[in-house]
Image 1 (cartoon, rainbow, N blue to C red):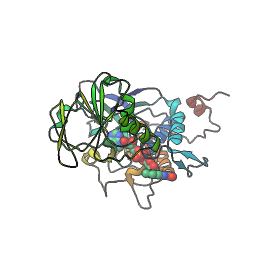
Image 2 (image 1 turned 180 degrees about the vertical axis):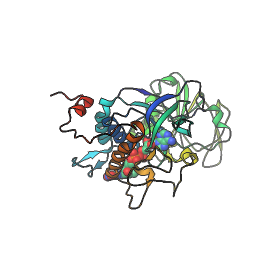
Image 3 (image 1 turned 90 degrees about the vertical axis):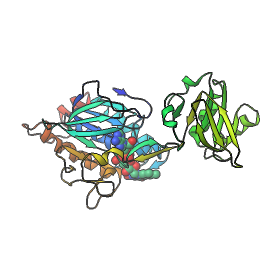
Image 4 (image 1 turned 60 degrees about the vertical axis):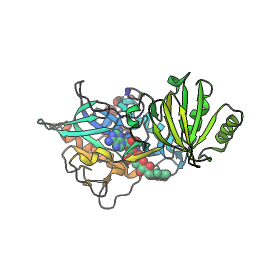
Length: 354
Ligand SMILES: Cc1cc2nc3c(=O)[nH]c(=O)nc-3n(C[C@H](O)[C@H](O)[C@H](O)COP(=O)(O)OP(=O)(O)OC[C@H]3O[C@@H](n4cnc5c(N)ncnc54)[C@H](O)[C@@H]3O)c2cc1C
């Protein structure tokens, strides 16, 4: 996919050293509805950038049910969460949207000229004429471990859900967690790290049977050290773990790789001055616009009488919101409705050859 930046989960402080990226539209959230929003904006020749807190596109479809079948996408008798997202990504390709992954949109402020200035957790800023909040149930961010003072080691000694394991080659590593992601990381590191310990709160894992069997095998062979307990203190080089029988085990390490899981958080959207009703953003059902002009909300994040949190409803909302945005992006132009079947202009935009 063209135009991607960002990696891992955004955690840095806001800094605005670069000038803001100017854009017709900023889409917050690359879930299924955010992706279809990009498509509808593209058909209307509205350029856009897309930001997501996750390091990849797909929202709930990929994060929560990537391999599971889905039977209610129009014209698609069956697909999976990941399959749907792959199709949506292919569909938006002609419009070359710029993706900014691994960062959370943190701030939104109206400027004197009517545009909106938005800033992310990685310091990227945007000056947008319109904003589409497609934030679903909130930003998917890693849960944090409750050990006092450990935040100072984030990114140097403590790594939440690291995207790449390459940097840990030759190091003494503690992999902390009991799901597939943690177990796969521990197994992968056995070939490259100096020593690997697997830390989990109990002697049972929530992972595929086959993965658990491979881990048990490596533990039995003495290649992987298993430590059962809860972390209680960390000074950057020694992790103290309290075992179920209340002993303290000290683990010397170069890197603590933590896999506590991901959970959605509404986060900063609550501070943008929008009305909120039960953590949703109320919109009208003509434009799917919030109480702020030019700020639309589509998909699971919005609310209106009769709202259903279904992908197909989000697709409809995104279509009408894109049309409503034309009045702001092209105030002096009447935009005719064109069919993708017959319009030569739409074929040009889609790169379709006859
Ligand atoms: C198990 C399960 C099965 C389902 N099955 C079906 C089904 O069969 N049919 C159906 O129609 N629906 C189904 N759904 C519901 C469907 O997945 C949701 O309706 C859909 O994902 C909503 O899409 P969305 O794009 O609005 O939000 P999401 O998919 O939640 O995506 C929102 C994205 O926004 C990002 N985000 C949020 N806040 C920020 C921020 N401040 N900055 C940056 N990024 C941010 C998040 O990280 C996320 O990636 C299912 C849901 C679940 C949990």
